[in-house]
Image 1: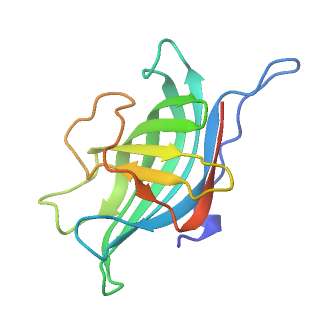
Image 2: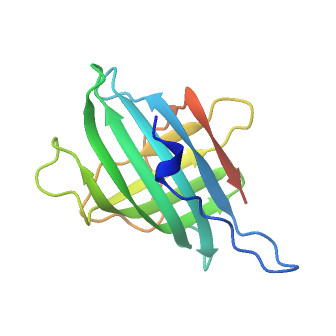
Length: 159
């Protein structure tokens, strides 16, 4: 798992008498379908800044993604900023820009590429997590396909 001190929390912005903005925070890991046996760990702290319309809300925050091969070797390590956050109920759909990292399986530099992350906070039940690989472009707040069960860690989604 990722070190807690490596990423500052993004506090939901609220003024006196104003409600807190929708937010997601936490870290979790789970086994993904492909390649079999690989694990992905995602740490995120983000808020929805201006929900102008469904699934196009401006976002603020950070993410860290680490992809471990079955052998335990790190296949990819990425971190970046959240550029879109659409948070409703217990579901957070985020997209962001990779600022730093390595991903040897992907040709070229991953900096500047985009990623989509979907988190489903299921309360006491295991959360669900989905993400895309680094892509040249991602539509704002695109839902990530292939939700996996989080078997380590927890996410908190507050709308």
